[in-house]
Length: 265
Ligand code: NJP
Image (cartoon, rainbow, N blue to C red; front, side, top):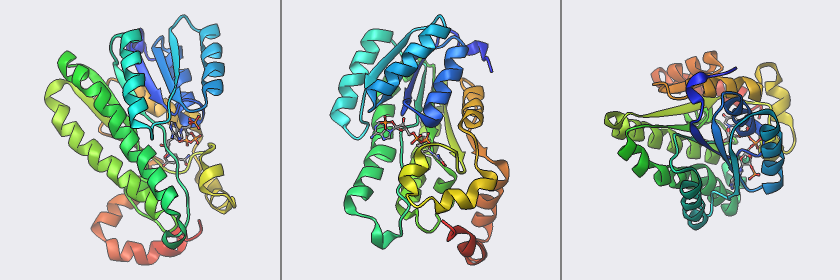
C-alpha cells in the first residue's frame, strides 16, 4: 500500500521495534515518509532502520525510549524536534497488557500498565501538541483497543488503561477540532504479535481466539490508510464493534451472556 499524501511527512511511532508499530513503519516508509522510531530495544530499531533505508529514499531516525520515563520523553522529543523540525503524525502505539484476575495482578504490573499505556501516551502527545496547534496541521493516532470499549474478565487493569486512552482521545479530538489536527483511536481485537507472549503466558487466550485473530500487517494497513484523514475511530474486526454497541444498549444482558465467552481467556 502506498499513500502519496505521506511523502516527506515526518511520522513518529512509539513501540516501533516490533508488532503493529514496525508494520506501520514499513508501510509509511513505502509511502515516502520520514520516520522517527522509538522503543526500548535499540538493536531492533536499528535493524528496522537499516532495512528501511536499504529499500527507500527516506530519512529514518531511531531513539531508545521507555515511555514510562517521562523525563526521558522530554529529552528525546527535544532531540526529535532539533533533528526533524516538526512532527506531522504521532502514532502512540507502545503498550502492553498482563491478563490476570484483579486479585492476582501485582501493584507493579498495575503501575507499569498505566505508566506505559496511559501516562506515556499522554506525555508523548503533550510534546507534539503545541507545534501542531501552532502549525494548524497534524494527526495523533492512539492505538487503544476493543478492551477500551468492553472490559472483560482477566483484563480489568489493561481494559481500564485503554478506557482511559479512549476518554483522553475523545476529549483531545474536540480540543483540536478548530486547529486542523486530526485525532484517531484504533480499537483492534486480538492481533498475532508478541503482545500475547507477555499478556497470556499460558497461551490459552490465543488458542481460543485463533479463529478471528488479526494479522499485524492488516491492522497497520488500516492505520496508515487513515493518516491525515478525518477518521474518528478504526474498529477491527468490524463485527466486534457491534458488540460494544450492544453492550452500551443492554449492559446487564451482555455481561450475563458474555461472561462465559470472555472467561475463556
Ligand atoms: O505488541 P508487541 P503489539 N516503552 O508486544 C513497545 C495494542 N493492542 O504490536 O520497548 C516504549 O508486538 C515494544 O518495544 P520494546 C497494545 O496495547 C494489541 O500488539 O522494544 N516502548 C514494542 O515495540 C499496544 O498499545 C493487541 O519492547 C514500549 C511495542 O511496544 C499496541 O497495540 C490488541 C514499552 C509492543 O509490540 C501495540 O502492540 C489490542 C515501553 N515501556 C491492542 N513497552 C494485540 N496484539 O492483540 C512496550 O486491542 N513497548
